[in-house]
Length: 174
Image (cartoon, rainbow, N blue to C red; front, side, top):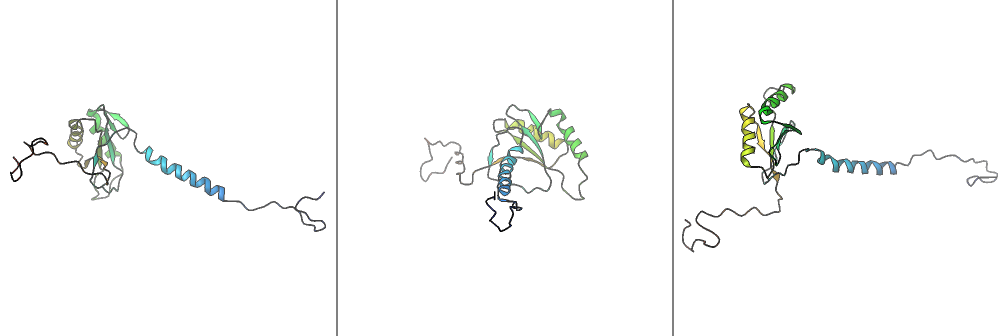
């Protein structure tokens, strides 16, 4: 009995298709690429911190900075490891000793301090002061970028004026 590809008397035989269809392969690779692009930003921070907003421009970096985080309970984290305030400088100095020697004239490694919006300003400044006292001069405070379309906050009222008691027209503010 002859198969569907065989004609009577032609002598042609059925041969399997030797070409590989790459379309499904490309589809799978694009889906994986999208998954990794979405998942990568979620893996950068391990300590949940609600950063305050700012309009300052981001800084350019050559070397990955160290990150010190202060969570809402006031606990301090070096990268993702909790540390005590007394041990913070010692651990930073150990990291600085273990990093490869920088090129002559290269700036020292930056240290970013991430303070949760709910934490008191004094606690964040205490952490920054401890780091600076340990000999680290490139310490920066991180803030979340503000929405560029959002309006800036209203300026503070002048002392002695309130919305209910504005200065009279033509009169200088107090």
